[in-house]
Length: 487
Image 1 (tube, rainbow, N blue to C red):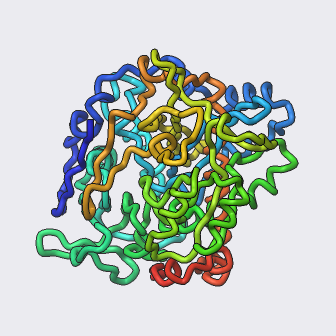
Image 2 (image 1 turned 60 degrees about the horizontal axis):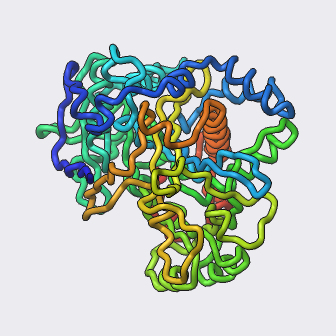
C-alpha cells in the first residue's frame, strides 16, 4: 500500500480542539497495540537504563553515561537516528548509526503508549521540548507574535503537531506550507523576525515549529529573533548534513574514548570529490555506499555492489562537489575476507520461505529539562530479501534500502507503508530485537545527538555569530556555502 501526503498550498489557521487522531496516524498504526517490551522500555527511568547498560558493559563509566543522558541540548533539541541492528565478523551485536535527522518523522507510525492519551507522543514533544523553548530568558527582550508550523512534506504529521501546539498553548497556530523551489511570497524576514502573510496581513512569529526538510538553509536564515525548533544550525551541523555529522561523531568519539563509550558508524571517508569515488569504492572491495551529504528522505544514497551500479552513479549529474563514501553493511556471505570492525546485517527473523529482510530502527527523542528522552520508535524493511550471493546484474538498493519515502513529483511525496514495521504485538516479534537492543539504540541515538549539538555550539563564537570560516574548513563545498542564508 502506498500512502500519499497531498501537497497543500494554503495556510491553515488551526484552533485548539482540532486534533482528530484518524488524521495523524497511518491506518495500520491507528488501532495497533504497542508491544509490552517496547512499552516497558519507554517507561524505564534513566537510572535503570544506566544500571542495566553498565552491568552489560562494565568498561562504561557510570558517571559519564549519567552526564550524557542528563545532557540538555542547546540547538539540536529534537532528532531521530536511523540505526542498523548488525553483527561483526566475530559475532558481536551492535546498533550502528547511519544518520541522525533534524525534524524526523515517526509519530504517525507509533502505536499509542497509553490508550487514554489520544494525541500520544505528539503531545510529549510539544510539552517537554517546544513549550519550554518559548519561555523568555532572563534579561532577553520579549518577542511578540503568533505561533506557526512551517512544513515542506509530511502533512499527516505536521498538521497533528499544529493541532497539539494549539491545545497545549491554548491559542491558534498557523500551519504554513513552505516548499523548496517555489515562490514563497507569503513569508518574509523583517527586523530579524519571520513573518507570515495570512488573510491580507503580515504577522510576526514569536516561535516556529519547523518541519522544513529540503535544503532548509536556503529559505530560513541562521539568525532570527523568532525561536525555531529545530534551528537551521542543527541541520548544517549534522542533522541534515551527513558530511559534518561524520566529523562531529569522530570528534566526540575522541572525547568518549576513555569512558568506554563510542558512536558506532560504518567506516566513513569524507570530503570525496566525484572523480575520487571509484578509487575509494575499489579500496573498500567494490562494495560501498555513496551519499550526497545534504539529501534526505532516502534520496541521494546509492548502494554499490558491482561495477554496473558504480558506472550508473558516475553518469549522474549532481550539483554538489563533495561526497562521503561509507563501507557497506551487507550480508556476511558477500565478502570472502572478513575484517575486525566490519558490520553485517542481522535482519528480520526468517519468514516461512526462509527469507531474511534488512531492517532499520528509527529512534526519535528530544531534549527535556530532565535530559534526553525517547519519544517513539518504528522500523522499516527493505523491499526484497537478502540474497546469499550477488549476481553481476543485482540491484542492491531493493535489498538494502529501507526508507519508505517515495518522491512522486515536485514537492509531492508518498510512503510505501507495506514495508513499515510497527512496534506492535505483531511486527515487533519479526525484528529479532530484545530490550537490551532498544537500550543500545537509545544510547547510540543520544550519543549522536549530543555530538551534533556540540558541533552546533562550536560553530558559533562567543558573540553568537556563525563561524563561517570554521564551517568552510569542515565542509568546503562551494555550492552548499552559496545556499546558506546567514540572516
